[in-house]
Length: 49
Image (cartoon, rainbow, N blue to C red; front, side, top):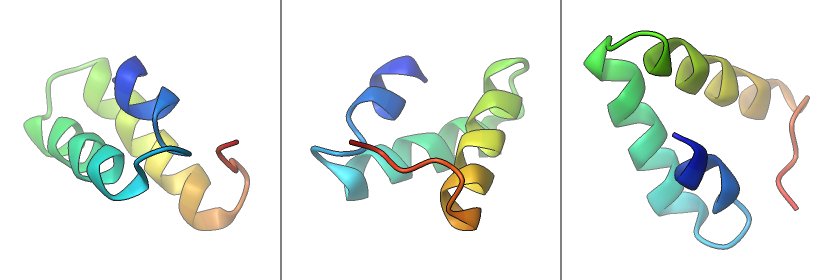
């Protein structure tokens, strides 16, 4: 989860796939964190640098 989030600026496609897989796994609390990260990206709240 943290590795994917931290690499969003460098390898966004791969990082997004990992975050989506974590969210789909339903393994809490990681799935919840991944889902919130994806939501904040979609809403433009979080912008990886």
